[in-house]
Image 1: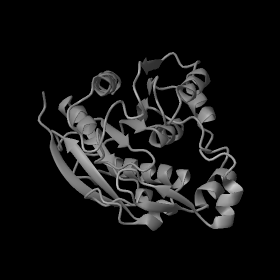
Image 2 (image 1 turned 135 degrees about the horizontal axis):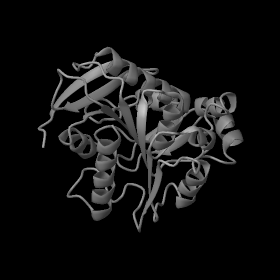
Image 3 (image 1 turned 120 degrees about the vertical axis):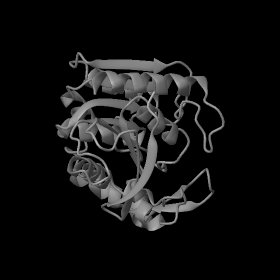
Length: 277
């Protein structure tokens, strides 16, 4: 099993820096890279993400895990830019993903250039991974964990949100109250076709592992069923419900041990990426 080395990098993102971790055991020769995309209120060092990236690298892949510039989180995992969080949009997140992919192709992360990519996204990051994979020819395979099937997560709240100027979001981990401005509402309205996750799912032709916990309390399993139906034409789709698993498959922050559901999710994902990259 390869022994990976971690290096840290900073790329220019839509709303600020994209803090980027690269895990690999070979920087001289081109090898496939897995982009690991966190979700809403997430960041690259939360819970299971470092473990996922390291396991991918130990399997002989390069893993690239990063803080989307709209996360508002610095390289130490601290939420120090609430305004960036407040102005984050789906379109901005996908553009950040394009910039990471471009850096990989150009060899700008102390790596040999590579244009063979896999994407693993969780929750909102899973929906964004679907949008990205549907447009990006460099993506050869996709893994989604608890992915959203629709970008409108706040039904009936738009009018009051706009009137107030922001929606207040509490970070359960830190207790910090973060503003969410109407930028994301504008993004949804102005780019409805481009942000149609179900339509994007229907365009996915690469191998796709769709993982979802049957006990997900944040993104209901019914959304996985929507994605499964949308992508039913894809013979390389595998839908894997994980019985009883919640939204993070048992992961917490900080991590203490690996819960059984998370072990299954990681093992299946690493095998999938290794098989298809």
